[in-house]
Amino acid sequence: MPRATKSPTKSPTKPKRTKVSPVRRKASSDDITVRMYRHGLGDCFLLRFPKSTGEGTFNLLIDCGLISVASNPKDTMLEVVQDLAECTGGHLDVVVMTHEHWDHVSGFSEQQCQSAFNDFHDIKEVWYAWTEDPSNKLARKLRAERSSGLRALAAAQMTLSALSLGVDHAVESERARRVGTLLQFFGIEAGELNGSLSAAESSLGKSRKAFEYLANREGVKVRYYDPGSKPITLPGVDGVRVYVLGPPQAEAMIKRSSPTAKGKEVYELASEAETGESLRFAFERAAAGTSTAGDSDLPFESAFCIQPGDPVPEPLRKLMDQTWGAPGQEWRRIENDWTRAVETLALNLDSHTNNTCLVLAFELIESGRVLLFPGDAQVGNWLSWQDTHWKVRSAAGTEETVTGPDLLSRTAFYKVGHHGSHNATLRTQGLEQMTSNELVAFVPVFKEQAEKNRWHEMPFRPLVKRLQEKTGGRLVFSDRKVKAPKPADLDALDQEDQRAFLQRLKVENLYYEYSIPL
Image (cartoon, rainbow, N blue to C red; front, side, top):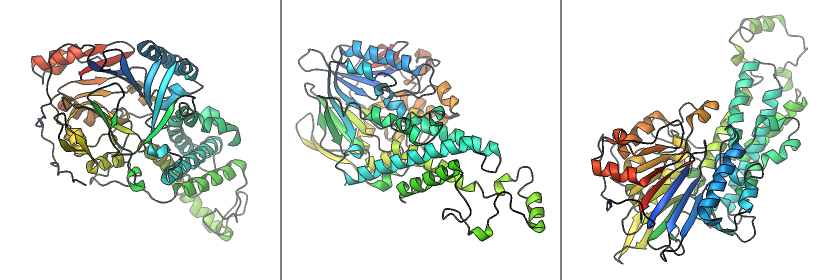
């Protein structure tokens, strides 16, 4: 496999840009259009490709969801789906389901707009990543881990919310809140977890049912795609190739989620299914009040345990009062220290699900432009693209090799990953490789909704700053409180580039739409 060339450790302020056949004209029916819905913290993108016959468009939808903390999510999503129906005439050639998270799939749920999608008279295909293929052994293992981890988190949420477990209530309350915000990515609200775990089963399967809605719909062809597989062509559309970049087929890469300060990634290869099961059983016992000294899950033998109501020797009582019982020293006690593991499990579940994203790059063969849609892919997914390559025919008819870094270098439209979070756009092996002089970036993010979950760095400010520099100001946020770029925001571009960008950007309250010459 070809190896990527080393990138400089420090990015130049004004990077050299790759020239990609600039065209200076207004949008026309021969253009590709990318519509980003401005409905809230979630992804919903409609791509329309002109058909070679000149009649109609090839309609491709990438995700359709909204985070649950949004106000009136059902009504909001219904407005989006109604616009989709009007725009496409109820016809979708392809729906791409990048991954299972609620903010990408909720529109297909029974709770939101499934009935509206039922009214679409024609949905031809649904695309999933290989990680959803029931015939793939590793895919089945990953899904089992995801299911087990989700059940463990649900049990933990119920327990942490209901019990003091003998320590400072504030500690467990905050821990429950943090776990709850991550459960929302699977469409689960804390209020739905009252009572037993068995009573919450329908909530646990909510995101999965939405994710699989089209796979179970009669007449829809289901496709699973591997990275590096033969580029996909779109029926009736000339001059477009679709490359599958991710997710990687190595478990280690899927479980690389966040970079360290030294640029290395941390990942876990232990069986998280076993960890999830152990935590779930422990939380269920705690919730039921059945955990007693002598149980095999306790960290010490019963001889070293003190149960509530047991007499405590005076020397130990004095020590406990002066240390473990002193204000601010609750962290020294072990009763609930084990519950910290649930936060790690929650973060891993979230990150690993993101890393199973189906990542697509659309190449416009004649101009060389690339449209990149990474979903919420994180570190391991991005890193895997560096060694991915394809043999294709060029516009001139000669055989050539296309690599992941090559596609990044020609990216003219970038759907910013995971709402602009810090670990979903790599630096040297990501954004710094995007050297097209036409780069435009769209960020599906609503800061107010992110802050409801205390995600104060979404979008990540250093990333936003670098995106501004790389795009010359052609950076668009779905957030309705953020104004669309104006000439004053595009000072880094010459007047011709400014006009070309503004002519191609359509601004509506419900969506932004950008036109790209085919």
